[in-house]
Length: 355
Image 1: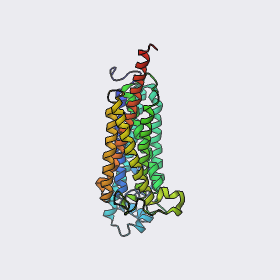
Image 2: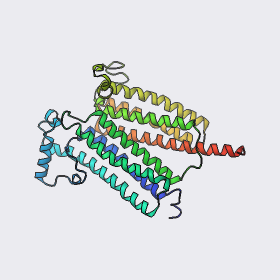
Image 3: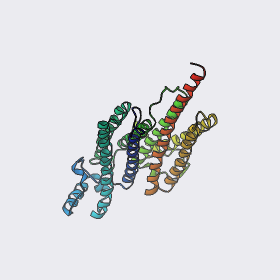
Image 4: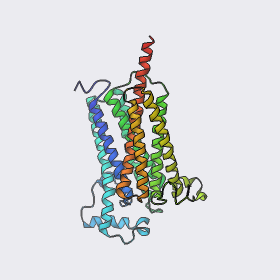
């Protein structure tokens, strides 16, 4: 294993981290489907251990269904639902939670093994431990989100759904970044600001757009104002301003408008960034990465418009959420490449000057 594991890098660890990132990506997509099918409140209890087992017999199914029929979503939205219909939404939520448990095991067990074998570069041990902690926190936030829809609401609170999605994406980015560090080893110089700052701003803007998308999903704003580029023939459809600041989280018109406007800004900013990076060609591959991010942004925007105007069918809604995660992944890789490329160029410049 000497070729793949050194004091500074470990390709075995990198493959593990990239595999976990793929699982988190799948979790984000399944979470989107769970939301679109209205399945998220079908399991009304949080049992981290025993909850891994689904209902095993008719009595268990009847008990689970009775608990669901006691919450507002059933009473106000799904009254009269059959047991067979309940089972269909139950399996989506159960699968979502099971995948979360699988991710936890897929990260925690190899982490301990790699620690014992001393395959994880020292500088990455704390990062991996933080990612493990964030994974545990994500489980708690998931239940915090679900609990918001069990007593007074017929769905989960949009802001809690957005926090849940946001943390999943933070973990996703962290896994990709740490995997790249494990594969390539530590950079030997500190990159100057400039392109690194621009790439970081672009990544932050894309992440913020994902959060705005979470609010759209939580408020079910994608099912209203399905015309484009206007909203029911207006630039901004009527907003319930009497809600105050809460309107930015709950008002369907406002959250969809914010998601649209930020997308337009991202397209302009991402395109300018890509054009400048391609023209300057700071390092091999840098311009290609920038163009890839801009291209992904445009494809995602087009997909978003099609999804909206099609009244968010399940497969398009899931594809749009998957696309958001892929754009974020591309922007993460782009920032990592920029920092490494600038560092190499900065070091080469100093050497050429005899410094």
